[in-house]
Image (cartoon, rainbow, N blue to C red):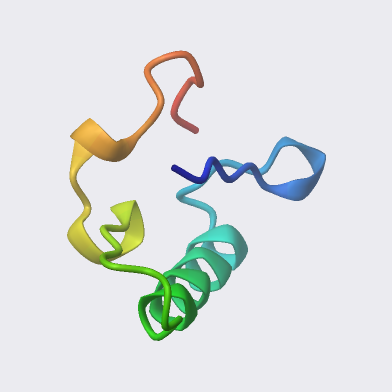
Amino acid sequence: MLLVRGEDGAGVDSEQVAAQGARLAERLAFEPRVSGVVSYWQTGSERLRSATVPRR
């Protein structure tokens, strides 16, 4: 599990964080020792968001 938070409190839906998160998920998917990657930015699934961090 990897938790991501943007600099200066930027939310995961901010344009910059979303772009970086999507790139990171894609890169991790090609790592030889990683068996699977499911990303909030790829799926948009609210189940993959933290319930403790307010949505901006």
